[in-house]
Image (cartoon, rainbow, N blue to C red; front, side, top):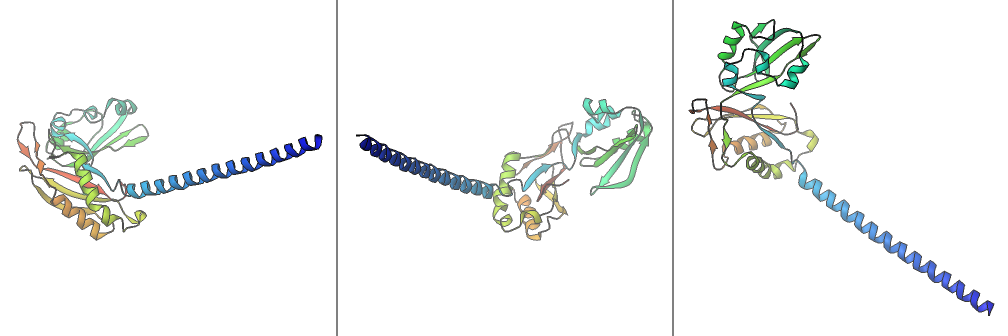
Length: 253
């Protein structure tokens, strides 16, 4: 009797071991399949998202500031927000410098306080739309250089909106960018003007992506945007020209 019981227990133990092994193998197979599937999905998602930020900005070159606000400026407080102003103490000097193709020029006006002097006010009042400039603030042992671009009261915009414009660029550059190593692209800047009639003019490449075929493609696409543009308007409600920038390639400054 005891021998029979021992044999039964041995058989039961063997069956349990076999069952445990089969369960573990099944679990391992399921886990392996899940991991392969997840890996393939991640790979597919990565491929679909490749260069999803190829066009990473469309707008003014620097921080937009309305011409009407610049004309009425009497202090640097008119250019920086409360948080920024809270960090600026004991101003030693303030200099406004016009930028051309992102480079500082000799066109500038200086003062020695946070309040603007007559020369600075006259200098700022002469700025036209799309003028880019920096404000160099020397305070304590620090220097701050916020950059700005003069914009109309109401800026120009694509008739179907910015999101639609970005999708238009991405869908029409996806095939071309797929052939290019992502790390070989450079930050590129394409300037264009939305005229007072809502047409595109003055398109020029300021900074290349390093691939002429990509540069030419983006240039052609901005010139052929379907649907048209809504022109900018000034404080009197009259339409005016406005220069905008398409930033593409790798994210840069």
